[in-house]
Length: 105
Image 1 (cartoon, helix red, strand yellow):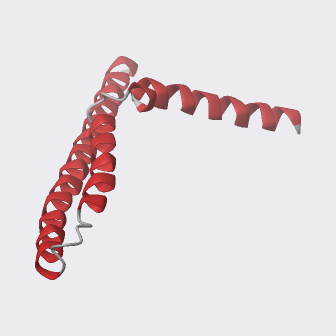
Image 2: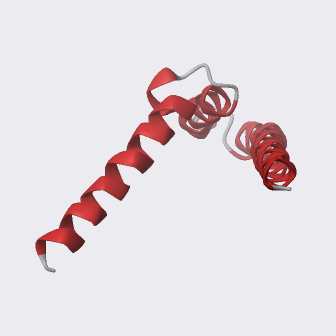
């Protein structure tokens, strides 16, 4: 009975991790879509209203850097914020919390 419950727990944990990953990917594609559509609009507005003073490349550049970093994080290309980093940080915070509780008991 215990083995079955443990297997169910592991499968549920895998499901929740996969669901979170899909939500992160979906969030990235939403960010990318917004980036493309808004920047097309900004280029049009800039070229229509003041073609001799170009400013559209600033939001294109800075938001673009953010989109690239977001994508690198979501697709685990950015190792400093990957799954291993998250797990290490969670363990570190849990240990600090445990140490604080033990200190005051």
